[in-house]
Image 1: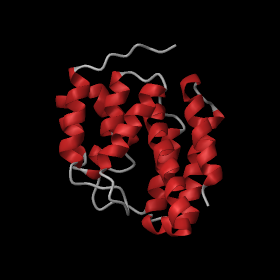
Image 2: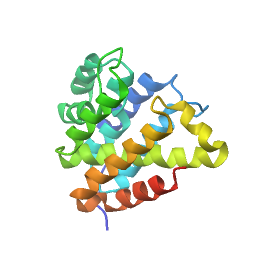
Image 3: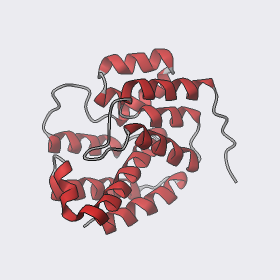
Image 4: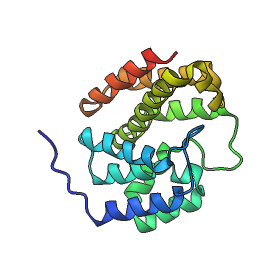
Length: 191
């Protein structure tokens, strides 16, 4: 079983661009290079029958939000493709700096996610699964201190991940099933 995706030059260019943009970035409260998160998201997309376009978007899903806003979207469109840029933009909850307040920004994103197409849903879900599982892993070492890393602290973080799960479980797509199970498990294990 599989979709026999070939990762070509476009994926290589997306990887190089992600590395350029995130080279000096680390995960919140950790010494882990941010690229690990991006590669993990791309792996989850590919393991869920995603195609090269979706894998490229997974590598770049935080590029505009964290590294340049609208200008980065335009660069992705030019260097990697408009289809990738469209997914990246749709997976970004904000392109402006400073970012608006956390809760209204996340509420808008959840509303958007409820009507998003399959590619946007898959890349977003891969990101959320990776993040939720990382929270559970870090909580096993740090306990509730893990939530000190997040603007929304514990209550907001739990609300956000459970809301995403609820939205995507309402009308699951076949290739999302394994990721939804993983997100559900992670949400149930978050302290």
